[in-house]
Length: 221
Image (cartoon, rainbow, N blue to C red; front, side, top):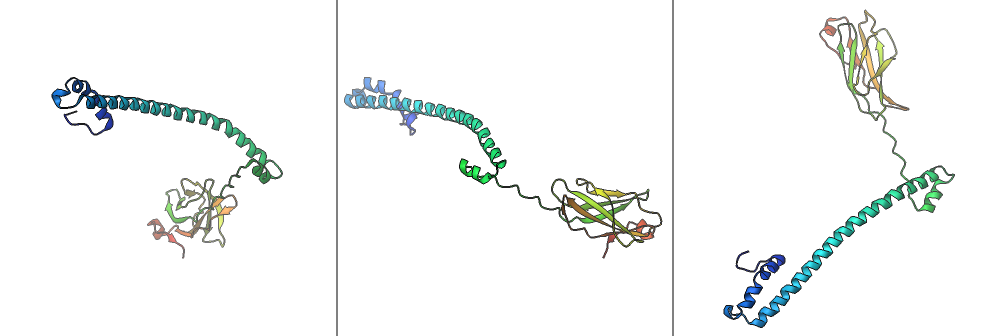
């Protein structure tokens, strides 16, 4: 540790413990009064005793803290079904709030209703070699959302539902396009239970023309 008194108290204690006997045996030769060396030896012993006490307290505190968490975990395990039983009793009683008040328990907040599906968008179409049409779109909605596909042929005046799209893949292939039809409009709507998104903008798909064969399709005005 060198020849100077170390700065950390623990290091200083060990350093002095390693030197005090030599100093006591040679007090006159090193210019230190014997009484001073004796007092220092007492201070060293007291410091070692205090350090040992501190280490014991630290170890006991660590053990006590670990024991507290072990016991507390057991307490929570016993309390959880009690609280659950109280809540179950409250929810099945004629006056749930009175039971919660009597038990001093705050009722759980009711679950937030799921938002309705968003309006589908970015519709696109692919003309397949077998005469079918694959419609794809973007859309977001809560779990359980399905997408309703509707079509209006050039010869029709209203849209008709032709199927449902997969909420994960977000595509649908129409295999029921009549031959000889010049064009058709497609829309997509997200539905979840009684909630429905706005209907998407209509996509115009052209059939049996040079433009259609070139893949020219666009949104209806």
